[in-house]
Amino acid sequence: MIANKTLDHNQARCYEQRQEGEHVRTQINNITIGYSDQGTGPPIVFLHAFPLNRTMWTTQEHLLSSQFRIITIDLRGHGESDAPLWRYTLEQSADDVCALLDHLRIQRALFVGLSMGGYILFFLYRKYAARVKGLILADTKAQADTEEGKNGRFQLAQIAYRKGASAIADIMISRLLSPATIQTNPDLVQQVRAMIEGNQISGITGDLMAMAERPDSVPLLRQITCPTQIIVGELDQATPPSDAKLMAEQISHARLTIIPNAAHLANLEQPEAFNQIVSAFSLNLEK
Ligand code: MLT
Image (tube, rainbow, N blue to C red; front, side, top):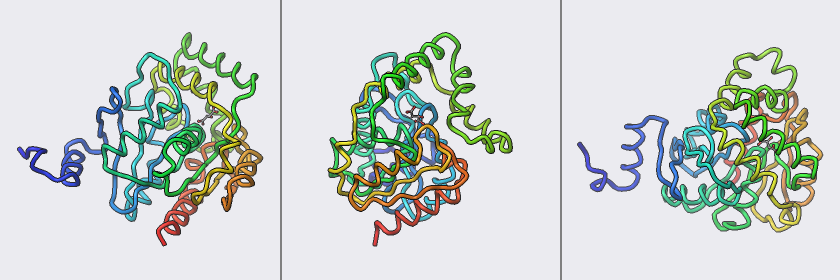
């Protein structure tokens, strides 16, 4: 057997992956974090939406890992990461992401965050701007929750606690996917349902509290100076195109692309269009 201490870091990483396939887990900030690290080249880090997991990025991973090093992370509370029963904050998730990058010896990266993933990127930029080479903010928004929104999160947490994750899937699927997708793409609906049902209640309720507590990031937008691409599904009702336009107006030189026939999970509903935007932006960043 090869002892890890005899390998340099990249060899150790490959060895770890050969051993574990795509299911790499490591200790970060006193919990276990699941992640995937595929391909070589400039790193791109993908942060998933609530209440999903890193497998929502599988098609992006397949397409882009021939040219880039693609890191997808199960945020704490999701997928193969631990879901401790305690207070969650989006700042803590940003800290987890940077600690994982330290572990992988990645200093700077392009970050892609969809919805809650985007909320976390605002924290990451506040605290670790020097590590951000570029941002892709997809189907997300800068505003904090309204009082009504916070109340909705409280109600959803009670449903999760009393009825479990499948009741959350029943409610969330029509918020995440377009009516056309729900009618015509049962495989995708099932994939999203399985991701939601795979979460522990501590993770779902922890995220809901964390999102309800997040501050307004609109004042931050004018301080973002890195290249930024904004993406939104034209049918997104959770974070509609008007929220994307606000970000595009406030972030200097940000580019906005609206994807037709997609709702909130634009990367899953229109993967080709989404991948094309991410690929073009990533290649441009390397010029
Ligand atoms: C998400 O997709 O991450 C959620 O819809 C975000 C939210 O509930 O605000």
